Image (cartoon, rainbow over all chains, first blue to last red; front, side, top):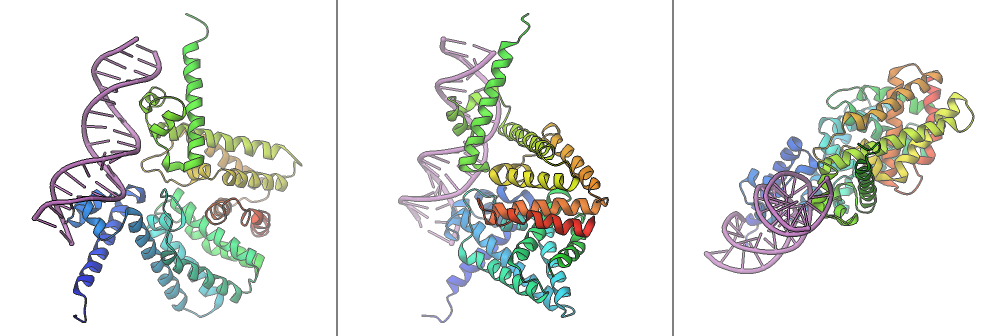
Length: 192
Length: 192
DNA sequence: GTCTATACACCGATAGAC
DNA sequence: GTCTATCGGTGTATAGAC
């Protein structure tokens, strides 16, 4: 038995290739317009062959969900680590990273935060990074003197609202993005 | 020529019946799961016969969009009219009516505020009531001493965020709903 | 005039040959 | 591992019965 499973490595690489093609397609045509036939054509297969790598179309969405939530957590980490280690400054950078993430690729925001695909729910594994991120948020708010769980929920509502309004009513612009800092001021004045 | 067009009246009644059946179906199965065949069966027709009343499935969504936005405006009006005529109290009732509207029928929220159906955009006629509602909001915020258009956008973001979080993470509950009043306090402290 | 019948091109998914 | 063949479902269009 070889100490490297070349077959498994190759399969994993093909899975990655399929997912990258899927991201490209949904960026071009929208999240709900992804079809197995288009996706197969994009990677040089028949649609049916994709089922050798993913058990269903929802499984592809699930893997994309995992991609996106891992990426978000990575960005949160680097945003917090990069710059002055002051609690409020870190919170601001974290918020900016979140909004940037939601806005620069609206389909990512749609997949993660708007449950729009009929019948699709992310698996616990794909969802886990988002849960960690939420706990991290609570710790960071506490570090800024915000201890009330109700305030934490207000924070997520404001963040979600800014991202949603930006994507829905001024896609590609910054009409709501630029309000983030004064929203944080407003929030901290009231809750800190 | 008769002074009443009985044929047109009958057609309009059938349109209404189809729309009511469509609302019932999307409430049960989700907005994107509406099919012409299901809908036809619900009203005792073949799917093809629906095309005598609506030119396409998107036309049905558009009429539903019109239903929902007119209903929202109606609720805003009654909420504002019913109770003490104090500007801030009226604003609070208006906000509560909005959240109630979004939460009691999540598909309505999805249809109006999350653009989730591939290729569907509401017609100007269906969209008009929402535009009026937004102008009315600005006037009411001004009456509360909030003159900055940036603040108006913050208001819509907070409202949208509360509704989105409530529907996404605690459907049927009140975890974010009950935060509306303190969000308004927070907002007015900062902007009024 | 409004329905039924039928068709088309597309969808996700499965079975089985090679 | 990828293919062909096929299935039941979808939105949509049109021809024709009555």
